[in-house]
Image (cartoon, rainbow, N blue to C red; front, side):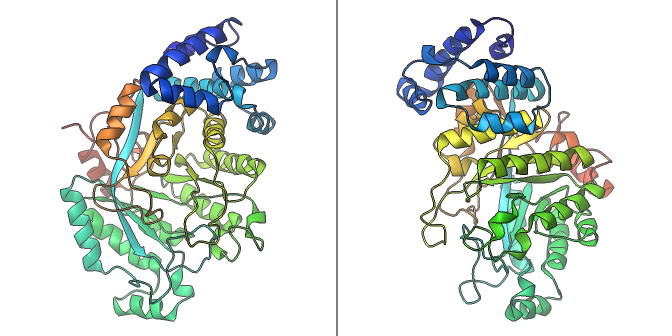
Length: 437
């Protein structure tokens, strides 16, 4: 890879060579007009105007060479001028390419909103409904129908998403659960995960706060699970902020659930929300909280950098979202913080116009896309077609591969229940990906 040969400590004119290479690559890949637009994002009219400061050169050189990025360095990177950001992207790309190679992954899923009732009142949510506004919960027959349709369509992931503990807030929901033989949403999800597995599709459950006992049961059918940290700052719980009135968004409690998952060796997906009123410092502190969790347990298989997009009718309808440059910085800094071994994802449907460009910021995964269902959390944002993803990823010189909800490096006895592991191994090739037909 050319960028790996242009390390900044070798020659000062290495940066000029890199900028020439970048100019040629962007124009070839994105076209002259889009390349010019991207340059404007960086506050430049020509690539020759771009130069790193001595401090930036030192920081990115250390990162490229494999040294840990300190919190102080990460905070410094948040304050880069637009013309300096391409050098941050260079470092992120070099780190990703060295460890992850030229492979970009995605999963093919069926999105299952088991219930959209929720006891939380997040300022950015369109997922939550109240009784009378829709179905209280999906029936077991509904889940079986979606699992069968998903398996028939070639999907490998049954993505369960629910509101947080609605049984603690709504008697009518408790009654509905009781009528089908359950007391909690967790109990119901555990059984539905087993049902999905029996129908040839792997459950990946995002329940919310969970006990060790619940997680142990989930592990018997889920090869992986997930819970977004969103942000480590308790300030966001205060009145007027995004997490006010959200008992399940207390950072300490979310971290405890993920610690329980680490104790049980459950491959785990987490990440942060960008643009919900947090400062860049709070964003960085959230990344380092997840980094420490990963170092302690090793079970974090993936970090999602998810941008908030305002929607009509929510409390934060008029809230300004993070702009493209801010997202690029956040994604690239995440790669430097976690190094090359972590899988880093941005949701392509929330960045539909420019998701491919985040490859230059160090991502190696494009998340789950569905041929059957919408994104119920972001219903206004359709999934990109896999054919388009393949075309755009290939244009940048990368290979797009489908994965299961669990990443290849976690497909072994330490991380997956033996019964589930047997089924996982039947569905992957020698590299741990879904075989290419």
